[in-house]
Length: 320
Image 1: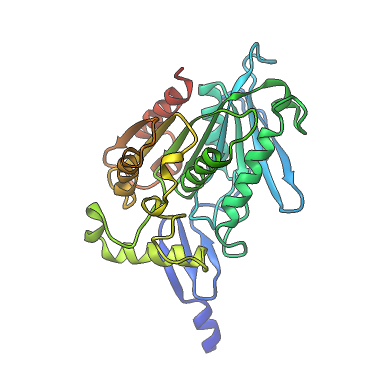
Image 2: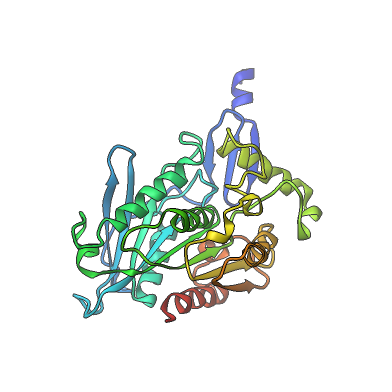
């Protein structure tokens, strides 16, 4: 093996069981590269289909609708979901995320919109955030029943919109919540946001982060890899504490889900403090899962703790 091949195969950032980044910039998805087609799921009775949001920017989504009572007797809330994967792996079409949206859609009785945004390193952050804003505006374009998708035109209640995501997807949800608060979307009421193990960070360690120095450095490096033009880990995109607009989050309710063993746990808890300190007037709920690590519910969706977390998220969405 020549020296160039050796360099190309050297690992720059290793975060099992999620991803591995090589020094040549290649990203290896350690979760799964498998994709599944849209379908009518026999277990949940949820139907899915794929739609193009922007041909120009290659943005798409997988839509989910419950078919237990079809057509619905009343309009359904919308749950817009952004998958995790550190901004550089995963899609709505992977078995894990497809099945997760089937479950939430069925149990919460919502229309699910799982957004396929462009990923780093080919499309560095904040491309994922901008793509997701385009996706949210696309959903909003259905407000008078004149959008491009008939499910949303006929059955979506744009007065009850929820955003949600895990890890990097929770970060995107936060960004969108702030943007809705600043810019508004005609006819859309953002009722709540669900943050599952949110990917927030910062230069100064908080909580138990200082006890895990090696992992802390990996996260700093991973952020710089996905967002090369960043000012660092205190960039407001990754550190909400540095965003002066935090108090303008454009929803009424927030659910923050953290896991006891997750290195990002303390950032999630700190986010609650930050919202309260910055004068946000909504209601914050926190759910902590004991003895579990980052995005455990995606790796082990049928375990008791994952089912309990799913139930808590569904309850948050269904609450009036």
